Image 1: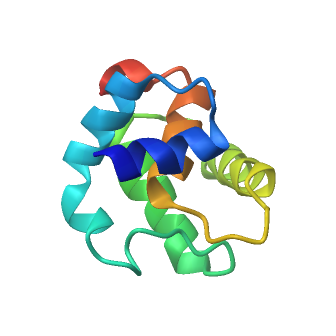
Image 2: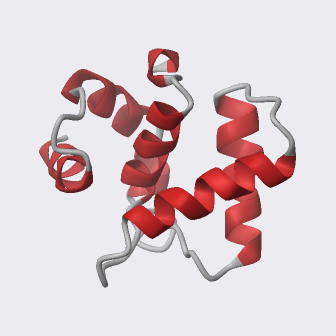
Length: 104
């Protein structure tokens, strides 16, 4: 799990490592696939998947789609460093933004 920790800590230096470990365990299958381990900011279907499956499904958010989409775009903009967008870091930042880290 140390790779998962390092990935998230690169974007969120004060991340709760216990939450990161739980998230990594939850998404271990997706993280084992290179394509699935990354969030493509330029793929509308990928962003819809993040909204529907993670924000609504896992976190149970009921905000309107526009608000959720804006949060995804904002998080991805914060992470824009020329690197790929690691799914675990995106998910952590979104869960933190919505005060839902306790889901993990």
